[in-house]
Image (cartoon, rainbow, N blue to C red):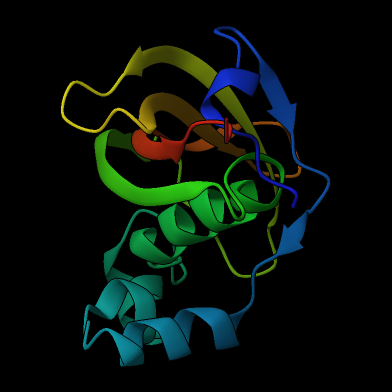
Length: 151
């Protein structure tokens, strides 16, 4: 099992995830279609060229969020997560464009025992995504309900 149990996390621990991902037009169009998001910012190149400050389509931000959290799973929560309790403070300080290569890190911000579930603990992560120029493009806090080590 790749994921860590609640007791194996330490506040301040940083995971530099080995998976890097070049995002593509196909990712953007498929994700936007699957989620029924018709925003011109993601789908209409001519509109973006003429009417936006970016001059081109930008990646769907929820794709970026999902990718950032998804890449973190193997080293952190694979097989040890009970559930995702929520995302807070989600921010996208820079746009992501087709062809950008993203890399990711996660930091353990807080650990606390579950008051209602004695076999679980709560880990608060900060997930961050950077582009190929090491510019921060996405960040969020995530609360995960984690298994405790078996007795």
